[in-house]
Length: 241
Image 1 (cartoon, rainbow, N blue to C red):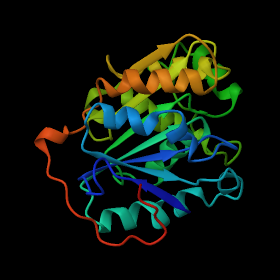
Image 2 (image 1 turned 60 degrees about the vertical axis):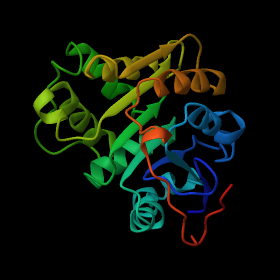
Image 3 (image 1 turned 30 degrees about the vertical axis):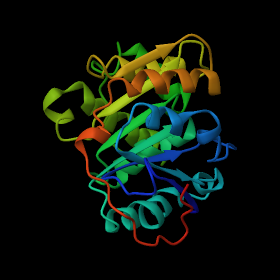
């Protein structure tokens, strides 16, 4: 996966890295165009931004998890980042979640904006059961191997404070008219207060940008005033700006 690195300030590396995963058929540079990177800088967070060219084809051929882990996260850890957050939109949010499902403990936090959460029939089953807290995952072999059959039981752990404490903090944002909002609400009901953000509107950049700015007001990111920045070593396949 190709990446584009944006330093928090003056080409000096921070200790925290925000890894941005685009939605289907979106380009990584759109995060910059839509103000996501500037919003971090305006708040003077000591957090670099890494825009990842996570093409939707990686999900189709089921190589996304390994590519993200080996091409992106492991090299960035080796460069010295102490805290890494995944920030994903739509299928990028889905990617952030299934990566943590497959590679537990690899990241320190997840922001999922309007994430795809799987097929509607599974969501309908959870709704019928009274929500994610009341739902009991079916026992026995699953009828198919689709990842959402594993994702929902994993997400259910966030409804338990004891289990959630062992997981990276998860923040969810979505538009109330989003086509995936029904599934979003299922997850929202299981998350702690202050971890769910909504806005009017649907599945598009104006809503995502608004949500991102709201979320930055509460995300536990380090401030520039209290952090030391380091001069970076050369990083292959990264463009600094």
